[in-house]
Length: 366
Image (cartoon, rainbow, N blue to C red; front, side, top):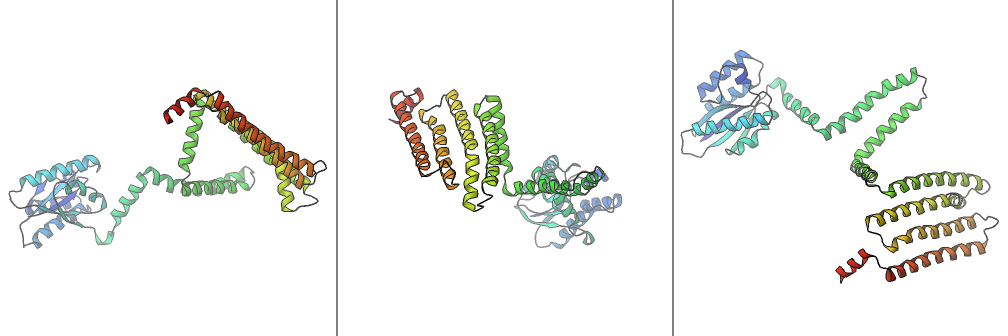
């Protein structure tokens, strides 16, 4: 048996006429369609009801029944639930021993959202969408926009850049009235570009994770949070110092090698200090959390060793008065000895003075 189900998800039939739903039977559905057309000639559900009657009249090779099921005015989850209940009522009213299949008649994509509810109760052979020819896909387009704007992620992706673009002109007017420099538009354009770039590269999750780590660090009392901030400040100072040194020392010989060497020479001390502070903060946190290992103390010594080597190389390439071949040899030797000495010293310390956690790990490994 074929069941033609006319779906009115927002219950226009129940709200605008005196008909109780579900409406079952060809004559009853036709009367309901006439009543709805009389109450509201512009309602698209009128076409759905008449389409159901038309399908009923054209099928003559098998037994067929037509019914109208409705939801609620909100057209939300409760509407889907009510449609499911009315489909159950219709199926229970059919006095047939045949397998029942359904053809669903709707007026757009919104009503078709209830298809999974119907399919869970009766197999669906097909879906017939009825729209007025002059308004082809108009309701579907409206429903699509409605769904897009209801999604928080899509709404943020589309509306935020659009809002920023629309704000550029009024902001430019306000900036001109206040006598602000013309770079205001450049700043707005840069912010919009950064936003689109972050969205395109999917970096918003990385930023959220970084902010969460900062928040946890603030409340967990992690020293490395402070030391990282200080290290970042020292790196910034080092970069500025490197640029200034490169500008001063490369006025005579502006080759790329000399410029790079001058930059390294001016920045290496500050960057080395940043590395030492950051590594000490990490070591302190590991000690407080019980995960300290002697080998962790190698980090600040390695930073110093690398800084000594880079300082000697950059000074040598810049041909400074004190930086002859002997100075270069001395810095290379000192850097190597500092790295080797720290490695051997803390390796011996781990063997002779093992920590409790290290002993338990070795026992588990054994």
